Amino acid sequence: MPRSYGSKSAQRKIALKRMARLLSAAETELSRRPERSLRYVHLARAIAMKCRLRMPRRWRRMICRGCDGLLIPGKTCQIRLRRSRVNVTCTRCGRVHRYPY
Image (cartoon, rainbow, N blue to C red; front, side):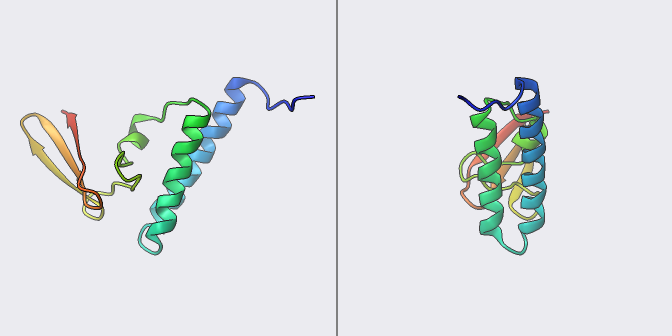
């Protein structure tokens, strides 16, 4: 008999809580153990994909899509304002993310 995990809304709430915990742990571990921080970010993205859940914009903009690194201004990314856009450059992989403002 298949195991029941509750309703979809309950699963989504649990997934959001787990992602929030992983991303906050990734921020704290970034200075001490960067490889562990990368693992936490990768796990948070994997949870979102498995549950088919869209991450909130704040979290999506914190994560580099190229290397799964955490984007912290001044530490792991460089931010420039140019032509009515915000250019965020990851210092690990060099990928540029552009957002309108």
